[in-house]
Each structure stands twice: as structure tokens, then as C-alpha cells.
Amino acid sequence: MTEQRSQRFERGTDGPKVIVAGVDGSASSLRAAAYASGLARRQNALLAIVYIQPMMPVGAALGVPILDTTEEIAEGLVAEIRAATEQVQGIWEVRWEFHTFPGDPFGGLVAAADDLKADAVVVGASQSAGHRIVGSVAVRLVKVGRWPVTVVP
Image 1 (cartoon, rainbow, N blue to C red):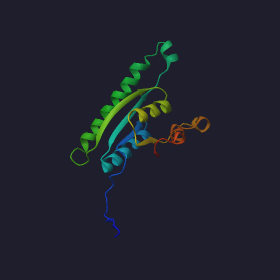
Image 2: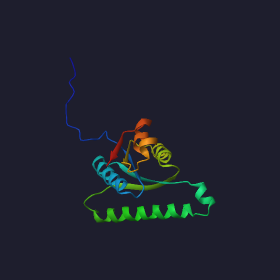
Image 3: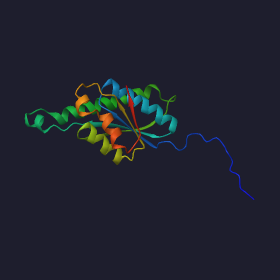
């Protein structure tokens, strides 16, 4: 006697549990965070919003308060995210955390995704012409091949 498996519809329970969204304050990165928020809501995943604090020892040597500036940027991003969250509270529930990691954008996002055990990474498309030579953060993340990467224009 053969056992037959029941073919029931299963609603998206095998999706990502942690989605990392890289933000830097640019319009593209904020759209990426909004897109990742929708993914996280539909999958009941944790949205880890990550800001990479650039480390510029040359600027620090010249007396430029780099750390203070990047902390102000991070605080501004958190305030903007909280304000957006409050606008949709009760309609759109998303579990989210904000993290900062030091380093360059590519290395910082790799470290963040690894540390947070990300199942997916969402970033905004680069607007820099210089990335045609070096390669954008998004392209470099795709080449790492550890997680699915979504690039939002």
C-alpha cells in the first residue's frame, strides 16, 4: 500500500527570517528600506536596517570630526525610520532593528549580513559614476553569493 501525500496550499512559511537593508540616507537606499519593509511584513521576518559608518583615518588626522558626523547621520536615519513607522502603525506592522557597523559600505554590509545571519540583503542602486570602474556595492554583494541580493532603483 502506498502512502499519498496531501497537497495542501502552504502560505510562504519558508521565506527569509532576517532581511538586511543597507541605508546611507540616499533616496535609493530609503526606497530599498521601504521595499525590504514590505518583504519583511509579508514574510513575518525581522527587518535589520543597517547603516555603515565610514572610517576615514585621514579625515580624523586633519581634525575632521568624522565619528560625530556619522553618528548624527545614524541618529537622523533612526528618527526618519521611527516617524515612518508611526505613520503606518496599526496598518503595517514590521519588526525592525537598527544597526550600525564600521567600515566601507561593501565590507560593512558583508559583516552585518554575516553577524545578523541574514537570509536576504536589499540595497539601493548606486548613483556614482565611479562605480563603473570599481563596481558598485550591489554588484559586489551579488558576486559574494552568500545571500539573495535585491537592488532597488
